[in-house]
Image (cartoon, rainbow, N blue to C red; front, side):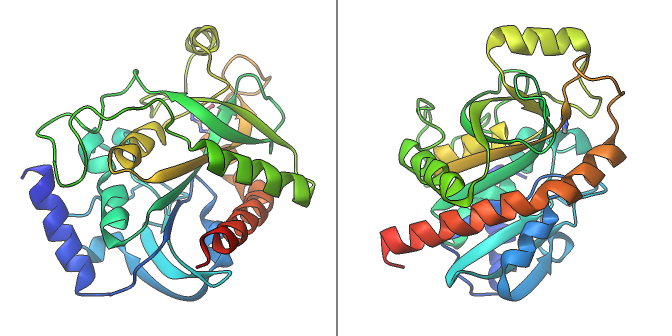
Length: 277
Ligand code: HPA
């Protein structure tokens, strides 16, 4: 089935279950599902209840949309994302992002757990200013869906400059350390080798992970305004003294999620004021 057909099917199936119109879509990275606790009055729809929707199979990713309000703003939270390493094509891995846009979300807040290259301290929040995605296939390969966006979308400013300023201001007000950097997506599921991390560093990456870039590309293709924040869960391969391990990443993120939640809450509050929502 072509992407456009799949998307229509999933949208129709979702709309039979809710008429909610979110303004902001948030994506929770590994172990960051607690972000959903920001939400009041929620309704949850598991991905498996949506026809044609890819399912999260990874421990640490609940696999459902949560709809509700943060500071009075209607939002949808993807509690658990889908990754290419689960066996989904790049196109399928971004179907949920497209779905959230079709539901009404113009803003996309992406979060992830990441290995630190230039920022090694666990828990450091890194605001993404750009990304390197060429290690993984583009989610836009295949017939272009003209109704969503253009064939050759610009990626000159994937992470919106004005939104980045809002995030920086929010972090400052909250007294949170916030670095800025470039995220590089690897395919996974194996963690990188030290040699790959040296390569990433030479190419200009500050943090690495196995997600986010393809979602940001799909979002930018559809004209969404995007924020990306990584939470450093470990020094990247070869830069720390312990081997990388998913359980460890997940546990670390459970511990560190509070600052990200505070930051997201404040950013949403500011957007609400600015947009007069
Ligand atoms: N590499 C890739 N993905 C990750 C890492 C890492 O070091 N940490 C958390 N997700």
